[in-house]
Length: 74
Image 1: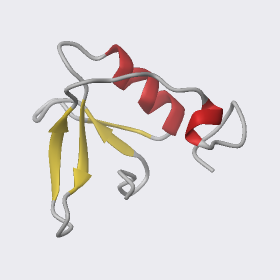
Image 2 (image 1 turned 180 degrees about the vertical axis):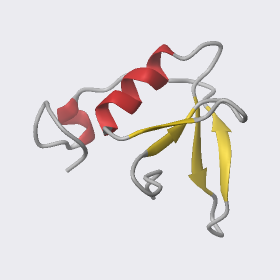
Image 3 (image 1 turned 120 degrees about the horizontal axis):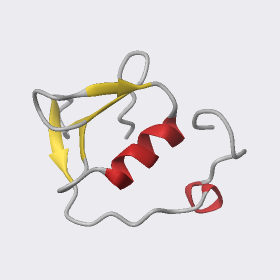
């Protein structure tokens, strides 16, 4: 499942969402969000909603299976 919607990744709490085009930038902003990271993604039937992380552990590009240190996802 991907949280890519249109031209980017919608992040932030409801009412304060913003779209971040670059995948790594979206991850960086999510990691710094307080009190918790919020993003929009589809549920099992395809309806898009806001989810809130209960835990967030940054991972390396290698752990995520990304090809390079720059740009979007692979």
